[in-house]
Image 1 (tube, rainbow, N blue to C red):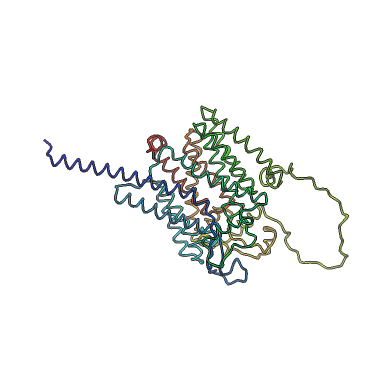
Image 2 (cartoon, rainbow, N blue to C red; image 1 turned 180 degrees about the horizontal axis):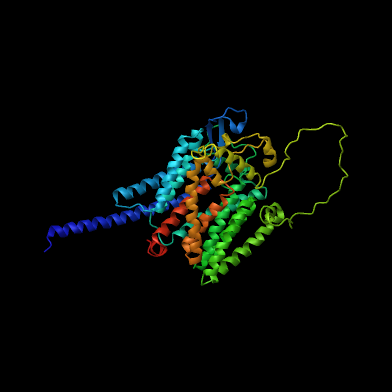
Amino acid sequence: MTSFYEELHKSEKFSDEEENIQSRATIDKWILRLLLFLIGFMPLIVMANVEEVISPLVSNIDVLSSGTKGDLFTHYKALFVLIITVITGAMLLIKVLFMEGTIRKTYLNYVLGLFVVAIVVTTIASPNISVALNGQYNRSDGAISWLCYVALMFIAMNIAYPKRVVSYIMYTMMPFVFINLYIITMNFYGKDLLVNNAWMQSFVSLFLPEGANISEGSVLVGTLNQWNYMSGMFAIMTVMYLAWAVSSTKMHEAIIGSITASVSISIMFLAMSTSGFLTVLIAIPFILIFFIRIEKKRLFTLALIIFTVVTIPLFNIFATKDFKIWTESFGFFIDKNPYKAEEISFGDLNKVHASDLNFELPSLPESAFSPGTGRLYIWDKTLDLVQKRAILGYGGDSLIYNFPHYNIEARAGMVTENTIVDKTHNLYIGLLYSYGAFGLIVVLIILAVVVLHTIKSSIRNLSSTFILSLTSLAYFIQSMFNDSLPSSSGVVWILIGVLLSIIFNGEKESLENGRNY
């Protein structure tokens, strides 16, 4: 017969386990809330910051020299990412150490560990260690930020999610989309918020020291740094919301998702950069595969109709005002621009001829952009640098201090040799330059996992993994033309972590049996 004390011991163990389960669920809930807060709020932060920059170069060129410099878009975003990473990391550690939580056993732990080692080693060995640690003052994409991205992905991989987590993500990021539509539209119609509104200047200057002001001529095209980043990020948003709309089983989500996708692609068009347009085009075949494989096509068709009906008139309105919207999108494939007025040629009426003096000038390269608006030239010169430090790299975000500026060859690639190159315009070449071959290999492994599951979820109609994997894939596609920033990488690396958690748990187990909180 079981003794009273044995029964009591079993009861206490059962009670402790129940308490741990409840505590772990509470920790997971708060981590999720903080991650949602990060992806919803962080990309919206626009606050001016000034700091004393110590350049590793002695130069009379302002952007290469030391001095007090200001930033409007990245410092506080990166700081916010760091704070949330520390808090959520501490919570995950508490869960593991004191609540019998477990870390998911997967080969990706070793992959991420290799990446962390590569980041740390290349930063220590960097010829520009302070820059490699923090990143440039106006980009904040150095080792600290990349360690945060890796940590956030790892944290997101190791918590349980409610069955409506994808919908939570979609609704959380909607303010980011619609606020940026307002900002970029105001700029497009010549009513820039930063130029024409004293209250906006006062707001973004809240943390500036006394005597510091926003530079004259500053404009606000959105809550991201500039046009290329706006185009790339809102191509990702277009793909994400369109995937959500066409895969939804609820009519209101299909309608809301398709309208938000139309708004996102409108922002992408207004940013007037081809990279975003190409990203959307490459993602479309996966949506079509999903359509072919899905059994109930009614909501998919409805979402696609709404997306088309809303997007076409908006594109026409914007392109009528500025024909470059066509040039930077469909103009990539179609030479004739229907929104551009025909230019009338007056032949040689105003041509002036020089006298036929007998002298020769030195032969200089013709001024022009290499393919990709100069990107091919930048990639070629960056790869020349990589050959010297292929394993160790140069450290994150330090290209501006090592790139061969004022090279006469730049005339044929960047129009003028006076252009200062501060980034690679390519995530993969940037990682190879910054963190060496190991850093690039890690990201390629993660990309391979994302591509694999995008294809699988498209064929098998797994809506949750389809949405998150296609969104992650869109990030990696636009990364062929753009660099990383906290506002994009900080968001997407979390989504990759959520995606992998769902995949490793199994779609059915993770979402159908997930907790409703």
